[in-house]
Length: 252
Image (tube, helix red, strand yellow):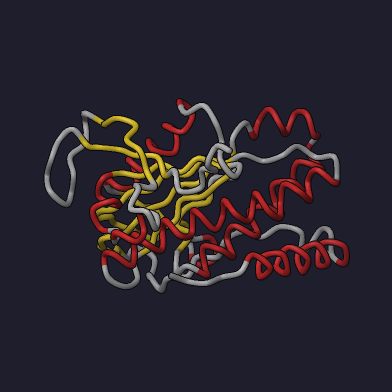
C-alpha cells in the first residue's frame, strides 16, 4: 500500500493555484498528456483495471456558477485527481471534459486492482479534506464524484495526427466501469463526497487486507448484478457488483 499523505496533494493544489495566479490563461488548465509510447495505428492488448470518474451534476453547476467560476472549480479538481492517477501508476486513456477513463496495467493482477482502488480512495480523500473545504471558503459549490472500476482485457489504439493524437480504449472492463460509475446514481448518499462501485473481477484480485477491516468485517456491500455481463475471472453470470463502504463512519 502506498503511503501518500494528504499534505502531498495540498501542496499540489497550492502550486497549481500559484501558477494560475501568475499565468491565468496559459497555465490554468491541465489537459492529460498521453504517456504510453504507442505509434499512431498501434494497438496494445493488456489485462488492466479500468477506472471511470465523473463529476456529478456538472451541467447544473456550470449554469449556476457561470463559465468562468466553473472552469476554476473543475480545473483545480481534475489537476489534483490526475496527479493522484500518476502517483498510483495509472494512465489517463480518455478525457471526458468533466471526468476521465483511466487504466492500471503495471504490476501483477492484484497490484493493478489494488492501485485502482487505492487511487479511487485517495481521490475521495483529496476531495473531502482539501478541495471541498477550499470551495466552501470561496463560496463555490461542493463537488461530488462517482467512480466505477472493473478489471479485464482491453485494447488501446492511438489514432489521428502526431500532434493531435487520441486514444481509443475498448473492452468489457471499459464498458462495465462506465456502467458502474452510472450505477452510483441509484445510491442515496455520497461518502467523503464520492461513490465508489466495482465489479466482481476487481474483488477477485484484491487481498483480504484490501477489503476487510481489523475486525474481519467486509469493506464492501453487494448492490446487485448485471445480467448482460460475464466475469472474466471465473466466467460466472450474472456479473456481481459492489459498493466500497470502507469510508463509512460508525454511528455513535
